[in-house]
Length: 70
Image (cartoon, one colour):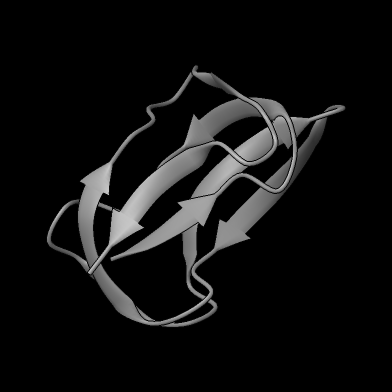
């Protein structure tokens, strides 16, 4: 199992990835807002979304797990 983690602290704006969805490496999975900027968080490698751990409005810290991939 692979984890997609937050690169920085911020607020989750949206989560386009859904459980069961196949993601390609480089595909946008979560969008954060930090310092009034939108930061897309992309899958580092291909996989299927197993679990989404955040929702819009959640605050995350750097290194927090956003979602799990198989």
